[in-house]
Structures are given as C-alpha cells and as structure tokens.
Length: 302
Length: 302
Image (cartoon, rainbow over the protein chains, first blue to last red):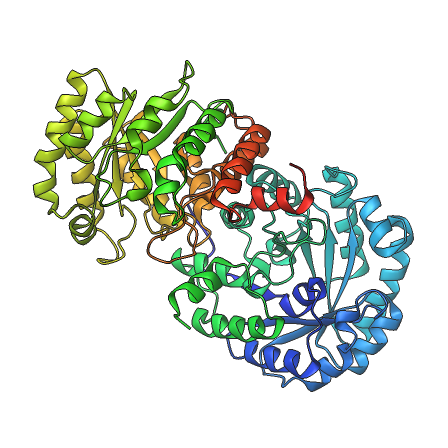
C-alpha cells in the first residue's frame, strides 16, 4: 500500500461542531477553546459561520469570536459564509479564508438554502468573486455527496457538475461532505476514481461523518487513493441533525490517532488536542463521543 | 479493489460480550436472546464459556444455556473451554464446536491463564485431541496479536509461532484477536501478508475490537487482503476490560451494515439482528454502544 506520508487536518469543530450542539457556548469560552486549538499544531481552523443568527443562533457571535481570538502565524482561520451579507461580516472580522456551501442533491439544497441548485450558483459566484477581490482564499463545501436524507443516492455526475461549477467560480479547494454518514468504502473509492479524472488531489478534501461508524474506513480508502486533506471535529462534537444523538463529524482526535499509528504525519500533537477536547467538553457539559475522549475519561489520562 | 463477495460473521456476543458486562443476565434471558440470534441468518454463535465460575461468574450457567437453547440446523453453536474440565462440561452440554484460547504475549497469557506460553501448550493439546475424538471441531483464539496491555507491541514471529503450534495441535480455525483494540490498518495489512505465506484464508478469522475506532478500517484492509471470516458482538456488547466504559468487540450490526452497503453478502438480516440487539439491550438495561443501535434508539426505527 502506498499512502500519503503526510495529511492535512482541517478542524471544523468550532463551526460544524458547535452549530449542531443545543447548548449555547459563551463567546469567551469559544475564544479560549480556539486559542487552545491554535496550540495543537493544527494548520487550519474553521472558527465560526456568518450565517444569519435566525438560522444558527449558536454562532450569532461570529464577529466577536473572529475578532477575539489570538491569531497564530501559519494557521488559516476560516469561516462559513452563505451570501454577500455574510461575506461582508467575515471580511469585517478579517478571517483568512471563507467557505461557501451548497448541496449535491436538490431536496437538501432546497431545505438548507431555500433555493434550487441552479438558483444557488449566482449567489455563490458573487460571493467568490468578491472574496477573491478582497484577497481571501475560498473553500467550497458540497453536502450530500454520498447520499441525501430526502433524495437517497445522489447521481455521481450531478455531484461532479456541482463541483465543476464551484471550481469555475474560482474556489481554491472543495470539501466533499458525507453529510449524513452513509458513504461506504466501495462507494468512496469509486467516486474518488471518478473525480480523479476531473480534479487534482490538492483541490479535494474529504469531510466524513461517522454516523454509521464508517468514517475511518472511508478515510483509509481515500488515503489509498492518494487523498490527503481531511476535515474533522474534535471529540466528534456536534452530532447529526438527521438522527439526534447519533454521531456527526468524524472525531479529529480519532482520525489523528489512526493516522499517527499508521505512521502518517499530521503535524498535530494528539495530547494537546485531547486537552483542547477536555476544555470544550467541560463547556458543553456532556461527554464527547470520540473513542479517544472516551479512553481519556476512563483511564484519567487527562 | 477485488473483495470477497461473501463474508462469514461469527457472533461472539453471548460469550465475549456478556463475560465483560457487569450485569448478570438471567439464564432464561440468555436463552431467549440466543434463540432470537438463531433467527437472524447467523451461521455461527459462540453461546457461552466453560471457564470456572470463579473467574467468570457471568457465565456460570454455561451448561443450562447450552442445553436450554433451541438448536437450529445449519448453525454452529460453539463455546469456550479453558481445559479438560471445561471440555467435559462442553461435551456434556453437546456444543458443536469448542474454542480454546491463549495469548501471543507472555504477560497477558500469564495474567489470563496463569501459565507461561510454553506451559499452556500441553494443556491445550490435550483439550484439542480429546475434542477431536469426540467429533467436535475446534477453534483457536490468539489474544493480543496486535498489541498487549502489558508488553506493548508483540513480535510478529512470536505470534506466528503460537498460531503454528495451535494448528499443529489440530485446530480447524484460528481467530486473531486485537484484544485491546490497538491494531491499525497498516499493521493489519502487513501482518496478514506475513501469515498469508503460512496459512490459508479459510483458516483465519479476524477478531477486532473497536476501542480506538479502527475496527471497520481494519476490517476493510482485511477484506482487501482476501480474508472473509470476522467475529463481532452484537451492539458492541461487552466493552474493554482494560479501559472501563470503552468499546470492546466490534459491533456485529455495524460490521454487517458496512458489508451490506459495500455489496458483500453475509446471510444476516440486519433488521432481525437489530431486534435481537434491542432484546439484549433491554436485559442489560443500558444503551448498547454500536452506531446502528444508536440510530435505532434515536429514530425509533425499532
């Protein structure tokens, strides 16, 4: 097996994790947590979302968080923006990178964004163009790549069309989201073979959810195909909005642990990461579901 | 990727799961559960252990369980035996197959069996010979194949020697145990390449624990290497004796779910399996940790 020697981990917990937690975390606590994440060796942290607070009240303090954190050199601090209004706030807060998002499936896009896929493109195009003019790099998230909670399986060509359209707008990187955690390793392998003819590996990140326990197996097959950029949320923070109480994002700590055991470098210090996990676990006042955090609790390692 | 079209699942929950649960389950409840497992399409169920009740009081009713269950044609009902005394009870209870066990690491073997590895062989040899004379097939478990809680990494050649010695005794199949859930996919792949030169694939089962979340990734690499016999405990029953509260055996339901999603047949009906999971979950009065059982609870599918 020839696998990448090094993997880039993108921590999305402060955004994708916290937006799916019921508990509202105090702004100062978020800032403290992100500052601690900055000391773990991570090179990328998605810190918040500039979506309207009506939709995601948990992240209504986006500007305060972005302005309040201590920026460490070498780390990209990113934030999600849904539209021009969000982009303005993100620019005001001086994030390094903005992320735009849409779904590969019509029904999920409609429910999430209240637009058809075709209606979504011009909105995002304007955001990307403006962001680039402001000197920001842009990440694109595509949701429901491997399955939709409403439409079921999503046609692979449709996914690729959405990806192509986002790259045509000028995005720098695309994160392929298994939003409901239904992807299996065969499906992931086949899809990566398919998109491998369209895009290069440095353009593509994998964003797995562990709802059905397959996230690390899907990571393995992605590594085997040569992909090396993976999203995660520390501790498995967040959960799945489509099956309350079930796992959402793959846990960054479990991901980093497996990669290190496999001899693959991430630049992340797992002990420091778990300490940051303990901090946010204390703030949300519930046990984080990752295996690493579980072992820590049981063995009192931290 | 060329993977096996069909996988054999060996359900060890009634033995390896229940022996690690604090709660003592009533004999009638165990029988009811095993009878329900017999209706799921499983072809192999390890129903109990004839280890002395002083060591595993949870399974002191081994004879009653083995005699009380309804045997279904086509299913192998197996039980663990540590020595001749255990074998006598297993034969009295008329199980189809007996399993013997030892560790690949000296310290774990000593703590578990109170003998050195070399002292263990003659005890097991006698058991295997007698079992074969009684017409029973014999399965060998080797523990701590990929790591030991006391000795750390275990020398691969030492593991292979233990395996060879067990086959020399006349065992029919060997189950390679990642007892503390430390194996990573690279390690598993390399080890399977190594033993592939010594044994055939129909002789080897993989027994993964999910303590660090890598069980399904390790399953995937095993499938890629052509292996097709896997142990599991329904719902992830049991836990890990070395990290209380952490996961033990890979959950049969998560394993079956992934295999089916990958288009690999198991002969197991996942819905029936989850109903059997719900039954034992009710008896032990705690939430089983598998992803599938979690989704069931959250979505009230069953």
